[in-house]
Amino acid sequence: MELEQELAGLIISTLNLEEIGVTEIDPEAPLFREGLGLDSIDALELALAISKRYGVQIRSDDNQTPAIFASLRSLAAHISSQQSPGN
Picture 1 (tube, rainbow, N blue to C red):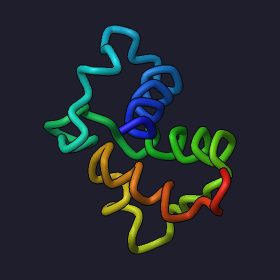
Picture 2 (cartoon, rainbow, N blue to C red; picture 1 turned 180 degrees about the horizontal axis):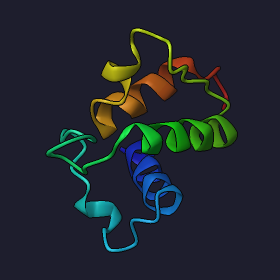
Picture 3 (cartoon, helix red, strand yellow; picture 1 turned 90 degrees about the vertical axis):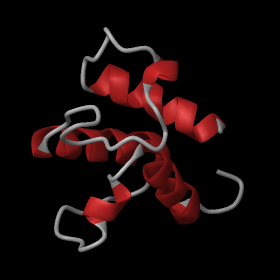
Protein backbone atom coordinates (compact mmCIF):
# COMPACT_ATOMS: atom_id res chain seq x y z
CA MET A 1 0.00 0.00 0.00
CA GLU A 2 1.43 3.35 -1.05
CA LEU A 3 0.33 5.26 2.07
CA GLU A 4 1.94 2.64 4.31
CA GLN A 5 5.27 3.08 2.49
CA GLU A 6 4.96 6.87 2.76
CA LEU A 7 4.22 6.62 6.47
CA ALA A 8 7.15 4.26 7.00
CA GLY A 9 9.39 6.90 5.42
CA LEU A 10 7.83 9.61 7.59
CA ILE A 11 8.43 7.53 10.73
CA ILE A 12 12.05 6.96 9.75
CA SER A 13 12.77 10.61 8.95
CA THR A 14 10.77 12.12 11.84
CA LEU A 15 12.27 9.84 14.48
CA ASN A 16 15.78 9.62 12.97
CA LEU A 17 15.65 5.85 12.46
CA GLU A 18 18.03 5.92 9.50
CA GLU A 19 19.31 2.42 10.32
CA ILE A 20 15.89 1.03 9.32
CA GLY A 21 14.75 0.80 5.71
CA VAL A 22 11.18 1.56 4.63
CA THR A 23 10.61 -2.06 3.60
CA GLU A 24 11.88 -3.32 6.97
CA ILE A 25 8.85 -1.92 8.82
CA ASP A 26 6.22 -4.66 8.89
CA PRO A 27 2.79 -3.01 8.40
CA GLU A 28 1.24 -5.40 10.95
CA ALA A 29 4.00 -5.20 13.59
CA PRO A 30 3.44 -3.11 16.72
CA LEU A 31 4.96 0.35 16.60
CA PHE A 32 5.58 0.33 20.35
CA ARG A 33 7.40 -2.03 22.73
CA GLU A 34 8.46 -5.24 20.98
CA GLY A 35 7.82 -3.79 17.52
CA LEU A 36 9.74 -0.66 16.55
CA GLY A 37 10.14 0.24 20.21
CA LEU A 38 8.57 3.69 19.97
CA ASP A 39 7.53 5.57 23.11
CA SER A 40 5.00 8.30 23.96
CA ILE A 41 7.38 11.12 22.96
CA ASP A 42 7.84 9.43 19.57
CA ALA A 43 4.05 9.26 19.21
CA LEU A 44 3.73 13.01 19.87
CA GLU A 45 6.44 13.82 17.31
CA LEU A 46 4.84 11.50 14.80
CA ALA A 47 1.35 12.95 15.39
CA LEU A 48 2.74 16.43 14.68
CA ALA A 49 4.46 15.25 11.48
CA ILE A 50 1.24 13.52 10.34
CA SER A 51 -0.75 16.69 11.01
CA LYS A 52 1.69 18.75 8.92
CA ARG A 53 1.93 16.26 6.05
CA TYR A 54 -1.65 14.94 5.84
CA GLY A 55 -3.74 17.51 7.72
CA VAL A 56 -5.03 14.79 10.05
CA GLN A 57 -5.15 15.48 13.79
CA ILE A 58 -4.41 12.66 16.22
CA ARG A 59 -5.20 13.82 19.74
CA SER A 60 -3.33 12.43 22.73
CA ASP A 61 -6.52 12.47 24.83
CA ASP A 62 -8.58 10.46 22.32
CA ASN A 63 -9.48 6.95 23.52
CA GLN A 64 -8.79 5.62 20.01
CA THR A 65 -5.19 6.86 19.89
CA PRO A 66 -3.59 3.61 21.15
CA ALA A 67 -5.50 1.65 18.49
CA ILE A 68 -4.55 4.18 15.79
CA PHE A 69 -0.85 3.86 16.67
CA ALA A 70 -1.01 0.07 17.09
CA SER A 71 0.69 -0.59 13.75
CA LEU A 72 1.69 1.05 10.50
CA ARG A 73 -1.40 -0.44 8.86
CA SER A 74 -3.81 0.94 11.50
CA LEU A 75 -2.16 4.35 11.26
CA ALA A 76 -2.51 4.36 7.46
CA ALA A 77 -6.16 3.26 7.72
CA HIS A 78 -6.92 6.09 10.15
CA ILE A 79 -5.28 8.71 7.92
CA SER A 80 -7.14 7.41 4.86
CA SER A 81 -10.45 7.53 6.71
CA GLN A 82 -9.87 11.12 7.90
CA GLN A 83 -8.76 12.64 4.62
CA SER A 84 -11.31 14.19 2.34
CA PRO A 85 -11.61 12.75 -1.19
CA GLY A 86 -9.03 14.22 -3.52
CA ASN A 87 -6.30 14.58 -0.86
